[in-house]
Amino acid sequence: MKTKLLLSTFLFSLFFVSCSSSDSSTENPSPKPPISQGEYPKESGDIRIVTYNVRHFENSSQVIEYNNVAKLIKKLDADVICFQEIDKNTTRSKKKDQMNEIAKLTHMYDYFSMSIPYQGGEYGNGILSKEKALSFHKIALPGKELRSALVVEFDKYIVISTHLSLESYNREESINILSNEAAKYKGKSIYLAGDLNEKKLDTPFFLKLKKYWNIESSNKNTYPTPTAKERIDYIISYKGESSNLTGTDVVRKMKEVNVSSISDHYPVFCDFSLSK
Image 1 (cartoon, rainbow, N blue to C red):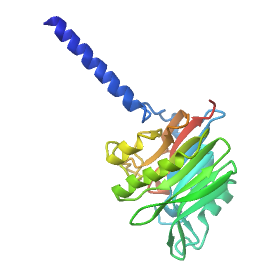
Image 2: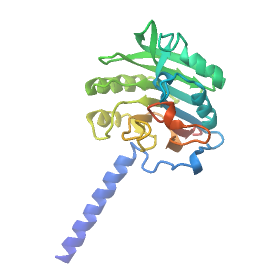
Image 3: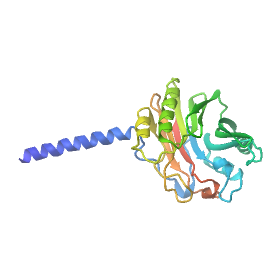
Image 4: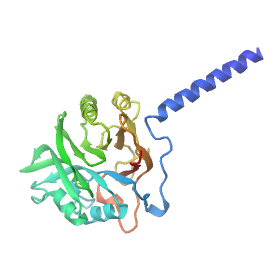
């Protein structure tokens, strides 16, 4: 009887370890914790990718303001920033090209994809980068409010910025489209960053996503500011190509920047080593 009990315990332990190992392949189990006092250094040679839903740069006082976002980007030393909810030449944003405005303040390259026409202009996603892109294009995505993804190719990697639909069936269709897009590229790491509008990792959407992508970003909540009750902003990497995560966090505090007042989302970053 004692032998049978020991054997059963051993088999159960093997099953538990097997399940744990399987799950860790799709989400980083121990994201790098915050570095002291809200400052976020990165390793030399790493690239830092940020996703940030900036609500057309409207702060908590309902004022459109770019300087604090620019300061945050500089202090983070971000290489690529994936923005969501960006205006281009709309009435509410005083006919400004918002990606161009933030690019001038940060001295970076800017790219934009329209999801919908809005108030005499356009509304969609943007990418800001230190490195000039080799190419960029838009992918149309489904939604009761139409969505899009912006694909930007660099020398050693590809970054996709997106803001997925509020409807679950449209989110699932979107991940099929984006996975098919990622499969076209060979020999480069592929990162997708954005507001995925999905709160739980056990949904049909995430079960489908995890077949093709690894969840890389911090498991901390990202929305809304300042309470951060939900996690809906993510950075993921395509499984078809190698990727080496070296650090990740949700930026909730920063010296000289009131992060909670800039937007209703917190920015999320991941650091990757491109050495293979």
